[in-house]
Structure formats: structure tokens, C-alpha cells
Length: 480
Image 1: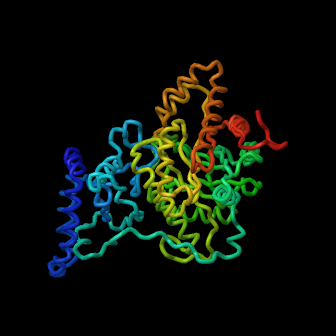
Image 2: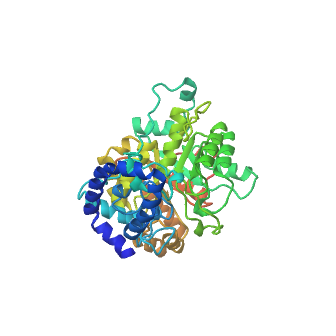
Image 3: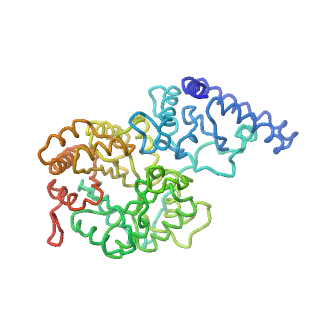
């Protein structure tokens, strides 16, 4: 079966042309379908479609086939069922984060797409809507005959012409910082901390206050690494009540579209404004590997849904909200792993869906980041969203190598680990590398800021911010 899938990708252009001809011809069979009855036609076509498309494309019969838009590689084979591009966890050898022995579906999709349109941008430039699970197992051939499926992805919801005064007053500090970047090129600084394994909010507030006056916002992770902690919604609400600006991370791994909308609405009711939309890590690497992943949505469709709640005061179902939440939406990007050609297109879909700030994976490879930003600038994406690049440090070369080997999506060049391994004080050398990286990032056009990451390492991260000259500590700030 794999040989046939590979054959299909290699001949993507021929199959794409055949698909277009068949779709143009298929409606002529409508009288036959009317004569048989739609359910009987369904019973005849679905098994045949399952066999043929299963053999050539490893089709999963999702009922909303997008093979013609994804290089003749079925995106439903993605371990996270992502329909709008790859996750950030593609392994260094091209393996899937969830199924390491399988090549990332989106590498095949990119290859097939380039065969369809050599030298051009990917064909799946528009958002592919979230799957309607009621269609699973249904024939898309029958949809082509009856012309009942959508001809194109849904457009993003339009922004309201005149936001209500109350909504205008609720602009978050991070949104103001992003506006200041676009207007004055004031560098943005954010930091990430993990929520506690306790219902006591005081240690969380104490850790967050180490960054008083040093950052524009503090990210609260949402089950990072598929490990359980206090919920991001609750922890972000705790910080909001303490007068600290949070970014609430919301992942798709653990919630369906009903739960995620309810959680975000609840966070907004508690004063949380900034929401970072992400897909989520593979559960098999966390502390509950026996858990069932959900992945009802991908990050692009999550953004689209939350933007609809904010701008059109409606749920994904179309049911109206009594009042729209005020949200400042963000997303993630990973410029450091393949497929590189698809990363910027995926970023553009996220921005089209509503993301106005972007936070990246750890940057240890400045060359790859410069290539990424060159493509970002070519599409003008840096003017539509603030690109905030991830920077961090670990205490030893051993820890860096472990992260590079065990955290899919993180790339650490050997030159960096060798430098830290050879240092008399590896921890101090790691800080110097981070500071040098920040100085280099400030010289790259389009980089709007840095996002500091380091698990339970708040004092070191605060020191990096000060040593890099990003902010001056206030009297209350504790710098170790």
C-alpha cells in the first residue's frame, strides 16, 4: 500500500488533472442517482471508493476529501488529523511526531503539491474547514455527482465595521505592545511559565512577579508535553486577578469544539484577553500515555472559530452569543523543521484565520530563522502579525542534546551543544548564547520580539532579559 501511496504522490499532477476532469463530468450522472435513490447510490459507491482510494491514497473516508488540495496525500493520515498543514513536531528524520516510523503526511503533501504546480506556492493556500464528523464513511464521489459539497474552503469571518466602545476599552496590554511594534518598532518581550501541580495559586503568582516590569505578557502552558498541571484557563485567570498580564494557551488535543469554546468564553468572563491557539503535543510522550487524544480541530480552525465568536458574536454552530468576548488571538510557528516550503503558507493561513501575534519554537539556528523571515517579509506577513521568536537556555549540553533528541520540532545545531559542553561554566555559557541570539534577532527585519522559555527557570530567564538590554529591572523584581 505504501508503494501505491508513493506512486500517487509522484504522479500528483496527472491525478490532479484527472480529478478536475472527473469533477466536471460527474454531475452528468445525476439522473442515474435520482433513479437509484441517494441512499442506494451511497451504498454502491462508498465501498468502491473506500477500496480504490484506500489502495492509492490510504484514504480514511472522512467524507470531505481534500486530496486535490494536498498534493494527493491524505491529511487524515496525520497523527493529529491536521487539515491545514503540519504540526510543529515533525521529527528531524521527517517522521511523524505521533507515529515516528511513518513519514510526516505533510512532507508527502508538499512534494505532491510542488509536482502539481512546480515553483509556485502550495495549492492549499486557503483554510480547509474543520471536519463534519457526520460525513465520516460517506462517499465524496456521490457529493461530486450531486454537487452537494462545498466548492471551496469557507472564507474567514469579516471583522466588524465598528467595534462597540466597551470592546475598544478592553484592549489587552499585549495587544497594545503589538500595536507599538507595528507603529514604533518597540521590541516585545514575553515569557512562558508552567502552571502548578497544586490548587494553591500563591506560588504561581510569586513566580510570575519575578518578571514585573520585564515582560509584556506571561504565557501559561496548556498541558505542555502532554503532562497534567492546573488548567491554563484557571492559571491565566489567577494572574489576571493579581494584575499580571497572561497569555492563555488553548490546545486542540484535549477538547472538542464544544469544550474549547466554553473554556475560552469562561476565560474571557474572568478577564483573560490573550489566547494562543495551538494543536498540542502527542499524548504518548506525557504522564498519561493511556489518554485518548481528541484533535477535533487544528489550530487554524480553532482560530477561525474564536474569531467568529469575537467578531460575529456567534458559536461555530451559528448560534448567536448574547455578548461577544474580547479576544486577542495568537498562534505558533516552527521555522526549524521540514517541510520548510509549507511553514510560511501555514503561517499565512493562521494569520488569515485571525492570529495577530505569533510565537515560535526555540531558535538555536539563526540561518533557518533568517530564511523563514525572508519568506515572511516577501508575503508581508510581519506587517499583519507580530512575530515573536522563541529563545531559551538549558543548564548543560547533555540537557540540550536530550531536548533535541526527545522533543519533536526542536533543532539544536551541534555547534551550540559543543560550545556549551566545552565551557567551564555551561550554565553561564548557555545564558551568553541566549543573549547573543537575542542581539542577532533584533537585527533581523520583521522580528517583533522574543519569547523566553525555560522550565522552572524564572530567575535565569529574568537575567537574560536584563543582560540582553531588553528591559531594566524595577526595585520589586527579583533577579538571581
